[in-house]
Length: 374
Image (cartoon, rainbow, N blue to C red; front, side, top):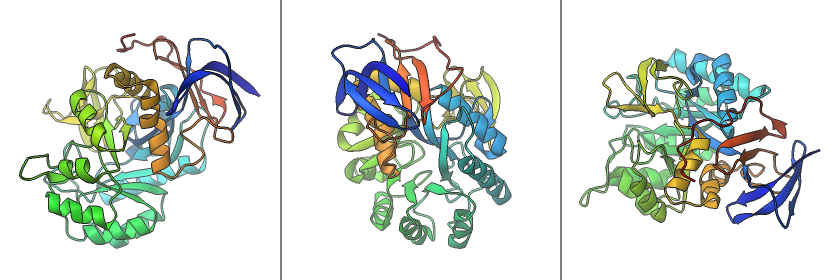
């Protein structure tokens, strides 16, 4: 039986405590005092393309590599995310992801399934997606659901056939998100009423909020219960995050990390696109268009605290809300019976230890440079 002492952090608050656990949490006890380190539920990242040089489109070995990287940096469960690509590439990626879902390996964040980002997106709003968008195809989607556990699908609701696909996926329990879209407010509202559950990297690759045409961003602020935010400080200004989170009841953090995450500056790939890591950002060859991110969930927590959020609020956005969104009652919280997915942060909020279902992850990058200002 493992035991950890520290400040136990939940969405409800933080208090000195003790965790006892095997594969699951056996006990959570209060203590009068504890070491100055923080015990959090492991982070769930519902939108991650890669990391440590590996891309989710490159098959089973690459998915395992990115899952190990993100585990070392605070993520205990994730959705491997595809990009828009030729259909054989997507089907090969689904097969590789499915192999990892079915046979999780040591040291890996649990890959819970797939976030299918495209190919049913607007070809005129690709952002950093490769140029292989196609119209929504119900029969193709039926086939893909048989290849891997697809948990989330990002699509553009203005495309012909999108509303029927939204209704079908919603009936199957798949979360449909609006993204890479030129939809008007009215088109997005119709999709929302058909079953859309969230908004993909909110404010990015969607029609903006204007005072006479609210666009998709305006609908998210008005109607959404949940929406993704990339909290690297590049995709969305911290002030916009703070303002949006006052309107959206259950916002959650995603990294949208690509192969360049955790790597030196230089060229990498994202599906069939070449991307360039420069500083803290990842860009297309034009040097302007953001192409995913180099963010980790550990850094995302530090960013949120720097932007004025408390650790309990950061826990809600990085673990509790994404777990609840996917209906994962055994993850995203520190209560007896839950999976022992635990993130340990030191006093500077740097990742110190990570446990995935009670197994300690090795080679955690302790003492790595941090932007957190204590």
